[in-house]
Picture 1 (cartoon, rainbow, N blue to C red):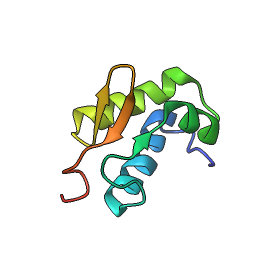
Picture 2 (picture 1 turned 90 degrees about the vertical axis):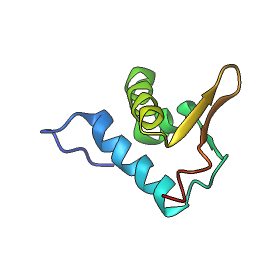
Picture 3 (picture 1 turned 180 degrees about the vertical axis):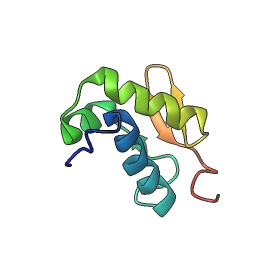
Length: 78
């Protein structure tokens, strides 16, 4: 991914992941792996955690301790 230098990387990644959730590419209850996102977007875990925090606040994912983050059931329906 080529980043726009005028915007924070995490917001650009957030938009990509949100689009994948809304399009159904990431279906309900599928794992949203921080490790895979970190590798795919070539950024630090801190950056990815900002993304997952915003996704959680927006109700698009739910995080289960020791299990990971998953696409929320209602995310694809909205």
